[in-house]
Image 1 (cartoon, chains in turn orange, brown):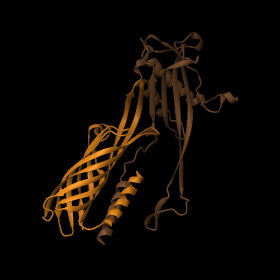
Image 2 (cartoon, chains in turn green, blue):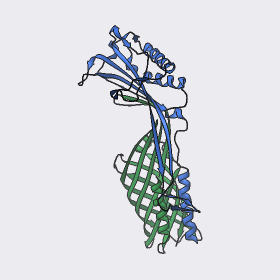
Image 3 (cartoon, rainbow over the protein chains, first blue to last red):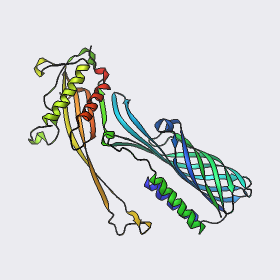
Image 4 (cartoon, rainbow over the protein chains, first blue to last red):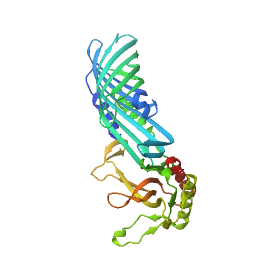
Length: 194
Length: 204
């Protein structure tokens, strides 16, 4: 997971040096698992962060890059599980790390007003890793999902910077060791325009 | 200036998230596991007797190279064997001598495994920044833990596998990180769990 942190830091520094008419945003991200991911781990995650870089290309339209990291986690109590003719008992710790890397297209309505609604879609990949710790053993599965992400939100513009509130849904198709998985996020953060 | 502040906030947020990363087990007992396996085609209900040794073999050394078999200390083995007997009795089984043609042979064994792991990183904090170590002599962090395993198998002496050896009809494995002393309560609980999750062993 340290690699994700390195990619994060590198991308922030690199895009900070890019041309004007751009927006950079940092968001704290709360995740709500759906489907298979919800069955695997706790459905709510308070550990998430997103970084967006958007470059305005037309009036109100932008293309950009998004990086994120959402961690779902659950400590399961002592339990007995069955697989075929094998029964196994113990405590489990389940982790799901999800790191989307997406190209985005967004539309900002009335970007010069105090309140700017926006919507967008992202396409790219998401690296996911599920790790179950039981006893002194780790059982890990991972995969690079093909990823889609719709998003809607609002920006409140102030002098120099903006506040943002958005909702996103990440959906990754079946990949590697993992089934298809998805999660909603609610994001709050700030935006710097240049 | 704003760009620097923004980058700094971003980096700090990433590190904060890293610091909030959830952690796992805190106590050695949290790592105890019990695994059982059985042959679904074997009808335990129609059987009723078993034989159990007085000692528990410790799997170590190499018997094929002439090493003598070792056993775990009798004071510990007696407690383990008594707990096994108690559970078997609760399921309706009767312990008999080896020469009394038991339906099943109960064979316990134990071993220890020490795992050594190490970690190194070419990057680390240095004078307020995150830089690679230079030249290539990163610090190596090493640690180790020892797990203990109790293996319990039941074999029907009349049923042989393709290699001519009896086949396990039931297997129970208890595994956990070892403390410095034998904890009878902890071990008894794991033995009980192995039988609790094997109710198909009940005899008529």
